[in-house]
Image (tube, rainbow, N blue to C red; front, side):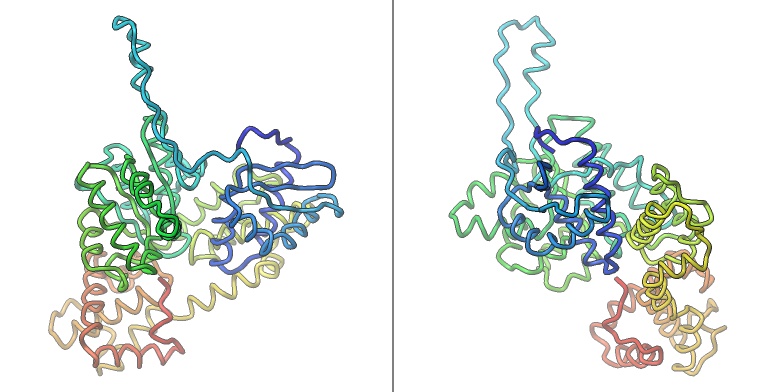
Length: 477
């Protein structure tokens, strides 16, 4: 927020309205998109019956006005706002530029004045293209077996940015599992440790749009200087870079320039670098040249810990039994849990005396639970049985340690289907196959490579999936 005066009551009203609106969205894509655009809001002004939301550019203002104004106005009313309120979106005239060049240090007149010398050496930091969320910190991130390796890698980057073994850091995993949180935690930690460090956070789509604008406005020199003169580059949703071939060339050159200068690059994606087919091979090679870490769907204990963390400051408070119900029934990703939790909180805010028994929770969370039940209808045991039948072997042979070629392929195919077509975590899959995590990952990667060149294997995969009403395009990642 900038220096415009915003009274606490209006801010509280906006936060409640935003929570109510997001809780009405079931689609993860809709929530993710709304969150992305809401992050572009720079300030809020309330005068008479006009509720004005300021953003940083006209495109965002027009888009928010067209897509969200009516729904947000309704949410404002539910949150306790005046029914006659007019909601409008405007460009913030006081919005600061996206990137600010470092200020040259002041000349030091007295060499013995060490405090003055230290102050002179501190340059103004760059301002991120998109804002870093203040609550995205390592302290606020809930660790578990599903994300511990990615967390450790992110901490490593925050402690030693630019170190070769962590550069670049590529974090991938399904939607809503905490990739953006970890990446922004790196930025917030580095900003806290070194305020003069230039840190830039943006999405790949933003990079692509800025590139197109720079081409149209003949501003490529400024564009290149902007992104090649920073210390840390944080790029979210790198998969969107696949949309533009020319932009990939520019990003490749920016990537090389920054790594040559030992500057840190962190990227996130829904899938691993090798599963980005529209990216140039040389980019994929660069991405896997550092550290690649996956975040998986959290297990029950981690889900419950996340929900407790999210609910700890809510008023009215959420009962432990309700959090356990959510952890037990909402398993696919963190944002789904957050959406369900928000819906429960809105419900008891409106009616604090409502008893939150399982029957009532099942009713108000019907959409969430039905989606979860759809995802988990494919069990690992069913997969093992179906694959075994297809190959004319037994489930015990799939679970055995026999390394005969006739058993390795069906065993690895069952692992692949379990990994790609169920929301089960790596730990859960490993337990079902009585194998180590590394064995499961090896099996999955082996099948991935073979599917590209073995038509017969791909046909068997299609046949097995069809038994459950799935197609080859229904992967969860």
